[in-house]
Image (cartoon, rainbow, N blue to C red):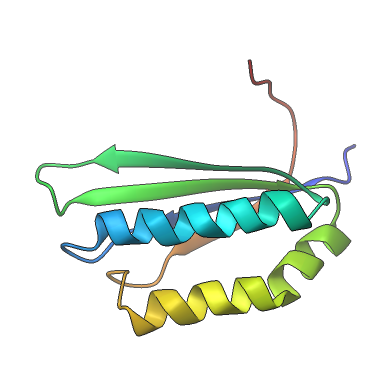
Length: 108
């Protein structure tokens, strides 16, 4: 059994805020990639609905261990990300977050 931990977070950007939300997420991912060696994977997927404001953003995160996830969630960068998202009102509601252990997969 793997000790890796994964998270899937699903967020709905507020109307008119999709591009700004993606900018803020991309900047956070750059920081995570460069500073959190325990973060093994962080990917963002965009699903468009019936109109431009009906968008769902799914974020898949994979960590080397629970300790790596804890370090991620306790970092100043993580806190600043959420402060920025809240201050700029980038989301329509609270993201849905599920946690589990990494089972299997591949990427080419």
